Length: 492
Image 1 (tube, rainbow, N blue to C red):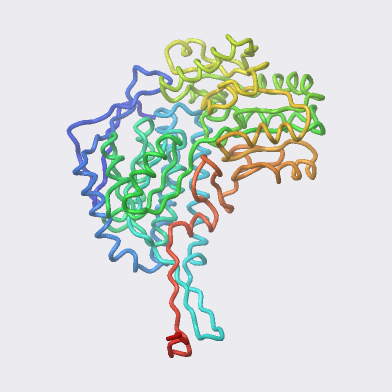
Image 2: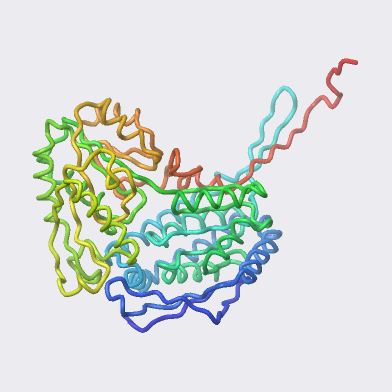
């Protein structure tokens, strides 16, 4: 594994573009080490990328779907062949444990392969014979897609957009987050090499790049994963030209533990712990607040702490025993610390969890020891805000009506989970306002790329994954061929 800084490029119309200004990306484990440099593109270069995608769309939209699939499958194989290199780069720039980086790549490939296997079914024309004649329904590509992706799962949250867009005949300009731009750029380069120039373009940069990607009149659709506040600005920018949008936004996902949950089920408790602290808690769909029926609350907390102390091992992402690495950036460290500190000042009990395997790194890197917050109020910031870090509050509830109300009063509704006897858990799940609810598991462990994923309320617009996610990159076109061509009766 090389530790020398790498330099990545933007890709415009199939060409790697050098820029004078570059953004360094540090290693969250060793912030004094630079992992690599990303370009800082200008507004003019962003326009060039959009123009290239716009011109490429004119022919790519009419390309044969079998050709698109073949190209994507070649890219998939090349990503598989480069998995070790990409995973190591992702761990170094992001801070996630190496096993977690491999997991992200595996999910990305799983989705890309699903998209290849199902796109023909999605774009196949439908033809219907009926009393009035014949109707043909086609599912056509939309045009240029602007994709803006976050730092927490940079590869999977980019490929979730790239695969359906390109396979259904669209072209794309993608902008990754400056907090994790390196590994995803390598993946984009692999994919771009398999497609005609202009089909997949890659730009990096700051606010002016994002503004152009969301307001340029040649962009037909925006695919964004990120914060709700940013999404509001994107919707305003897109409104001028009425762009299509898929927005996967923040969440404050709750886990509800019913009175019939078995607190002695070690495997279930381990799943719960992982759902709270995988990727140092930096996942949009992670369980960020846990409500436990008061009748089992004390026993649950005791067993939860035991399970957490067994699984959580904090340290260098490349240490083979580490399960939780550093937080991605200093701003996120400060934000999570402020939430925990405020809860403690208001009387909550803070329980430190797990084992620190590399104590010498803790003061220098962006590390936070995972914590459990007990005794917080239902409406404290640690409970109602998205922490996006390695801390979780556990709160008691008295009955189902109370906990459903506590769950549903959130402005968010991405995912949720219910833990207990299965049929009982399903009955509660039916009353929860969320895009996805999982039973006796949560977060990545319960994700299935075959089915649609997305949020309700301020957690998003539209769906990704599944055939519905593929279809969201198409426009429905209805062609009517009536039998009777005479005008209908029109009164004088």
